[in-house]
Amino acid sequence: MALHETVFNVWFSQSLQDYLKDSKSGIIVNSLSPGLCITNFLSNMPEEHKQAMEEVTKAKAYSAEEGSRFIIQAALALAGDGVKEMKLQGAYFSFGNVKEVSDFAKSEVGKRVQVKLWVSIREILLHFQLLMKMMQNETLDELSKVDNRVRDVVVTRLL
Image 1 (cartoon, helix red, strand yellow):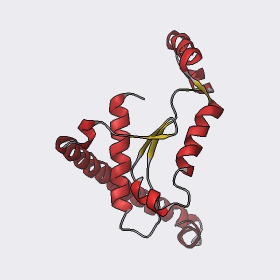
Image 2 (cartoon, rainbow, N blue to C red; image 1 turned 45 degrees about the horizontal axis):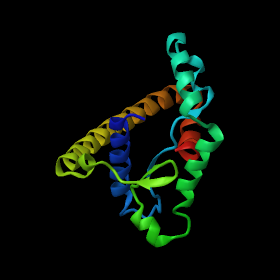
Image 3 (cartoon, helix red, strand yellow; image 1 turned 30 degrees about the horizontal axis):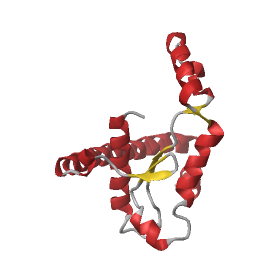
Image 4 (cartoon, rainbow, N blue to C red; image 1 turned 180 degrees about the vertical axis):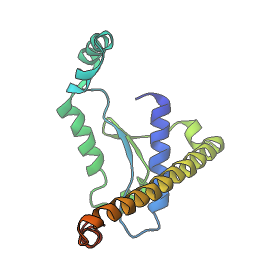
């Protein structure tokens, strides 16, 4: 994962964790990178890129099983330890260990960028949610013309 992708990933998970911290959901949000893993992900890659990536993965990549162990280690690092859970909310795990985020990510400028990104992401998600509700209503209106029970089923069973 490139550095900028890692920083955005960390900022997103920290912002989401901050957003959820006052809720009673009990959800802990962290980000992680298991490293480069050998999977069939490259199978649809253009041939000119596939060969180069296959050489890199043979030299430096973990098996999918090894990569999955890093994910499990990150999940279990929090299991049943309330103090650790509070400390590790919004943490970044890499190769099974908690890693310190970059100085830029922690700086005042970085924090301002993080807030701007979070506000933008929330705005996009709210617009998407509104659009989905509008589409649901239009679709439900059309389907209700076929069978008037459709709206009740959707509202009571799916929403």
